[in-house]
Length: 333
Image 1 (cartoon, helix red, strand yellow):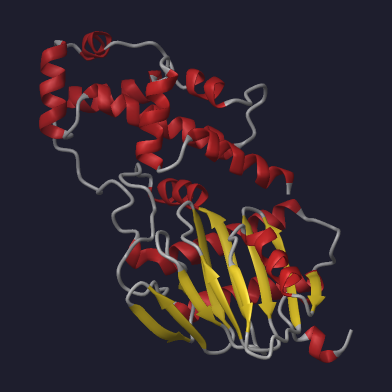
Image 2 (tube, rainbow, N blue to C red):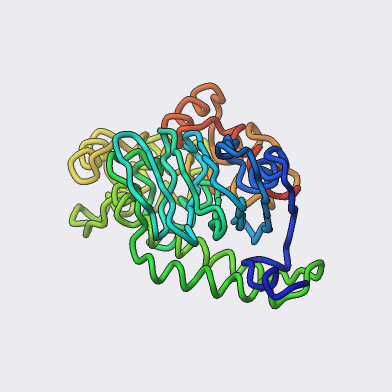
């Protein structure tokens, strides 16, 4: 290996060197799941290099093209892609056009057109939205209020770009210092967590509405007790009358108090708790003997699978079967 090859990020995980557009495009897409379109410049030449790997839930890719190219990436919706240009990169998205010299996220609902530096290339990290949502909720101990959908009008430039660049460089250095083919599960999980935390930090200006607001609960004790009861008995076939009886008031009083102090009914809160439990169980992907969405939903207290699927899709912007499919693909790779 030459010194120039050693200087390439992720040189220890080289995947392909090729002059063919399809080879380079597919080498990137296989890890990022982006399905982007790659078009060479006027001379049609390419001297591409792709290196990368899966680090836990995060796909990390380095790509350089050796000449001018145009990359068109479709809306990513339930997949977060972050690009870290290693040289000036022209970017067009919606009504925005800029030269990126720091990390930015690809748009969730609009096409992103990029012109990366031909020689220096760029780094790309890709991770499922659901994984980041789960990490965000567990980190702050708060429930999801809205799906994480990057659909803002402004350019999605990452916050704390120097910090992200430093973290990615350190992780890549650790990967390149570790022998390929000898996985260390604990190290991999740690590096994956570091990368995802850096992505959440970078996305912080755009995801402030994803979590429920942090508020100090000032309602009656029986409302707090009812919330605890729902959390502990969510998987059971429980009625509002049973919850009210457990905290010593009537069902009508409980419903009125929930609406006044929480802004939703006990039934709505129970449904949200169950949806989050289903989501967490699917994302955890280690449930023995439970391999179908219907089994997971029923084990989480849902009895009507049609209504469950509708509520799940409304909250998470994808069908539960799509979530499970993504988790299975991650396990297989």
